[in-house]
Length: 265
Image (cartoon, rainbow, N blue to C red):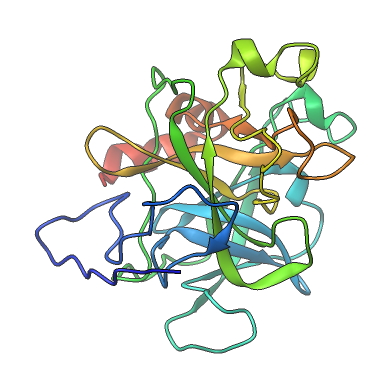
């Protein structure tokens, strides 16, 4: 793995701009991510790590609805190696959980697998902890657009202890909804990147689909939802993500609307 530890200073700030840029130069079937190159990645934990998530504001985290039960949760930021206490980690308890009102935990493929977590206190933003940008309602992804899944799951193997990333080109809905792909399970509220024989088992539930915008910032365009029951490397069965949009999050929670009006990345 080659990592260029380019530490960008105050010339660029705000959401979606890592201080340590990720290695995106090669098409890979999953590899260890460069240290702190995805500074919005969150580990959602109860008694143990359960899901991934995305920091989208100092005190808001985005994850999957299927991750949320009656447990008490905390989020851990700046986590790279789960087997080591490396120093910059931040552990913050979750104060409130807001699940999409149309989520049905008996039908994951019905959609709406998305949740907002309000933290007890704001994360301390620094060069290792930053929020991802949120896409606008009108945001569209093009076929084969390069996006990245980030997770602590290894491709087709046991859980990795270090943060992993995988290149996942976007599959257009007209392709993903074909009968030999996901068929009717692929809704327009979903996005399914990857899908060939080298698809990576890239995502904990709730983890982000990171796509770079024209402004060179990273946007969380999807939340990891479900995979094929036969395994993560099944051809034409990419991991399915719930599409993210500011309108979806505003409709879920009015407090988030207030946040958007008071905080700008």
